[in-house]
Length: 189
Image (cartoon, rainbow, N blue to C red; front, side):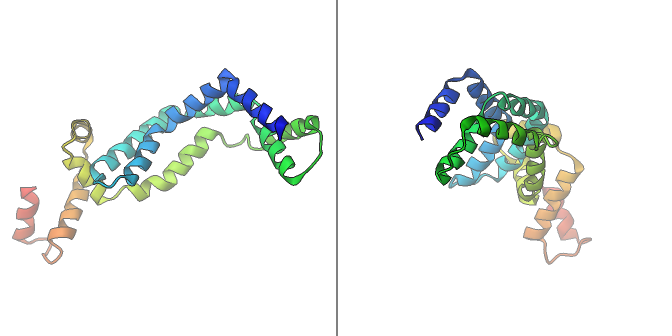
């Protein structure tokens, strides 16, 4: 266990470790904000779509940053630390030089898909669950200046359709699509 602790301390003292951590946090910061929004005990729908849009932009810009962080971790013995920890837990007495050689070959196995691509894929799977008529309408109606500026500059017909669907669902579920009452409701908005 002492050897593992020394390796961890050595790893934490390396400047490259903190550079990698900085890149990772910077690349996914809007995602952290989205997660934090869901923890709050207040309304957040107006901010949700705004931060989903920010995350899309940030991840597209940060893909190269994430890929570079992945390349840099190969220079540091992260995998060796993990292997050492597993062997110490099992009580394995394999020498550390063998462990380092094994970890180098293991590290090469996952080179096909980059970290940036993995993060983008995971985000794309989950982002659609965050986007709905409520979050889009909240984004369009938000009084927060930054969100309001973003929605004013980026509103499209699809966003307007989302608002109409929400209004119909909430206030006009019993009205015919061609009724004057529905037309008045939508034009008031």
